Amino acid sequence: MIEPEAPSLGKPKINPKWKVAIIQSAWYPECAGALTDSACETLVRAGLKPGNIRIIVAPGSFELPLFCKRVIKKLKVDGVIAFGIVIQGETHHAKLVAEQAAKGIMEVQLETETPVIFKVLFVSRIEDARKRCIGLHSKGPMAARSLLSCLAEFKEMR
Image (cartoon, rainbow, N blue to C red; front, side, top):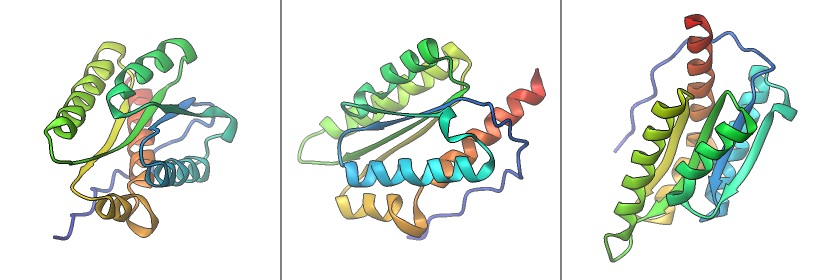
């Protein structure tokens, strides 16, 4: 199955002073790290200062909402990207983790009015995660562009 391309959001006006946090799950560091690296590269190429990008590792995807909320409150970031990989096993645990991470991150966004880009990939096999994390089809740049678009739109709404 071929995934559709993300819609073009145009080129947002970037404020190089924006502070961004990327929180990645410690699980499957090859994949989560590749997402983080490609997102950072995209943010810097867009004009953000490297010193304004904070990378934090959470124990797992289930903890991402808590880490996002804490980072928003304590570090006063303008936006967050949350990366995690959840692989379906023989039980329903993985589905619960992925669903609760999504629900928690949505709650954090609404409560804090801070954009949190949700990129927790729930896949069947590690190979599926690698396809979406490493190389040409990485979701990292997409997450970075989404965050920049949100921040630019929020700036226009002020």
